[in-house]
Image 1 (cartoon, helix red, strand yellow):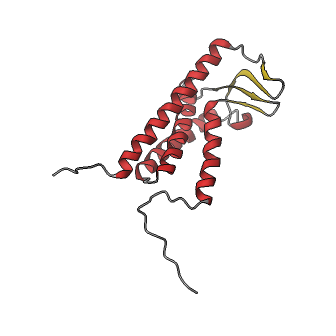
Image 2 (image 1 turned 90 degrees about the vertical axis):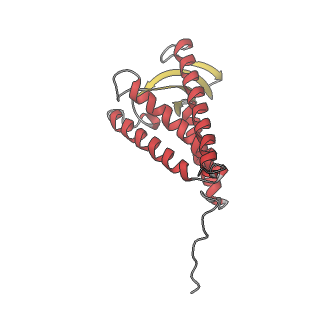
Image 3 (image 1 turned 30 degrees about the vertical axis):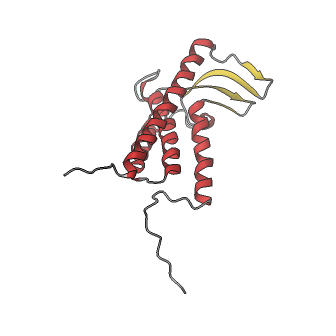
Length: 174
């Protein structure tokens, strides 16, 4: 006997994977453009000193923290990708499925950079090219990941559950 309709979580998983693939395509496409159009380290002003394009290769995490531990970031990115994919399979909330899809795409593209880019397997440097004043230089995946953080806080503040069919938590009257 077969199920007549897929479970809601599985239908939403397709949305999650589709969004992840979209983020990967956009992020990698813009990195391809940056590598072909920009010169390493040479800034191209977009909005004065506020916003610029400037190609760099980042071996570290945000703000180039931990530049000597690229392999650790590769492992962490791999674990994060797997955990998001597993968790997303169980989510029945459309909002959380969207958030996880975007987050999965950002994490997966960073994992891909660290795994397959120069200088070596598992120790690749992330391509960054969007400069924000003198604060930092990032990429599209960074924008998506930060946006997911904000979106997640909003969902939690609004009480949006991961699973819409999840039972209410038990309360005790004291």
